[in-house]
Picture 1 (cartoon, one colour):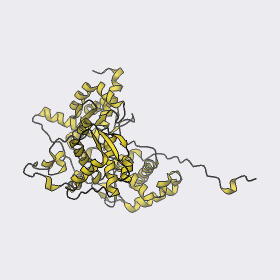
Picture 2 (tube, one colour; picture 1 turned 30 degrees about the horizontal axis):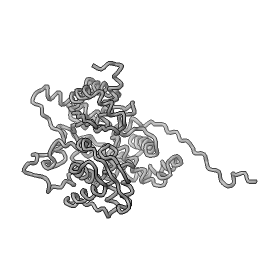
Picture 3 (spheres, rainbow, N blue to C red; picture 1 turned 135 degrees about the vertical axis):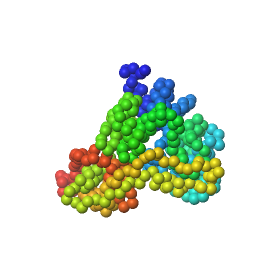
Length: 440
């Protein structure tokens, strides 16, 4: 039993491990690993009981082995400049991990690149040439992702200089093999998977008590993994658990965060500022533009004087699974040993139709916002309204306020939470002109 005096420290450890499933001596910061070590026993017991998660602790890392119930496109790996990884970067990351697993304790960047290039050349549809600047840049992004997490430590040189000119630059890395092995922990043999949904969890219930425990764990996992849980997107058993106070109270006690309930769903609100990977509302031009867009979208959806909007059903995880499986190297699957069929979230209903905001309307609205508030936007965004619109909609999609579809976006209920935001525009002091100067 954790005393009230120490509860805040324990909750901070829970939030740290849930938000950073891989913790090292330097990632996400130097204080995280000692904090998790202090509460290791309690964390192991509570996380497996509440969520079905398993924590592994080594000399240099803590690894949370999570259970995945559904595919999620809102938590991509990101580059140092905060751009989501594309297919090529994910492929290079996987091949880099494989190469590091075969290597020693130290390796040069050019040697690592040659190894990854050789493996990439054996995969249909993938290539890596150190002569191409785009390939080098993607490869260095994958290496930098591992470096941030402590799997690689730069001993000498510069990866960016090598990316600019491999003949003039080089980098030497120390390899932490414990962290390399902790980064990638597949729960199944990938060559036995006919599709990505085979990685999802399946029920092992053989009794009523086991089934009740699994449903409770799925409900708690949904609450901490998703920005918002819409009741219409989960099966009835999970929705009933979330409407009930017990499982939700467990999550509040463990994390120290507050839960907000609405008719359409439930969300865990990060009042601590230390749990979410994306803060909203936030600072910066993109976040502020997203807030402005919310008000415009909400007004358009509820406007009685405008023509009614078309409504579409948001694409479900089968759509996302198809996009992922399109890149699966089918020749590498051992079909004789493959799982019988892909899995989807059991019993999840079809979501309700949502209003469609078309691209033309969004572009016109963005143009109006730039006209009204552009003086407060950063110069690079003000000069490219189309890119600003794309970035703002991307943020709203990550927060599950809109769903991007062909032709526009679908408005989701969470938008209404922020629709009455008040925007205060601070005018910048005008720069003096020649006629304002006092000349002698």
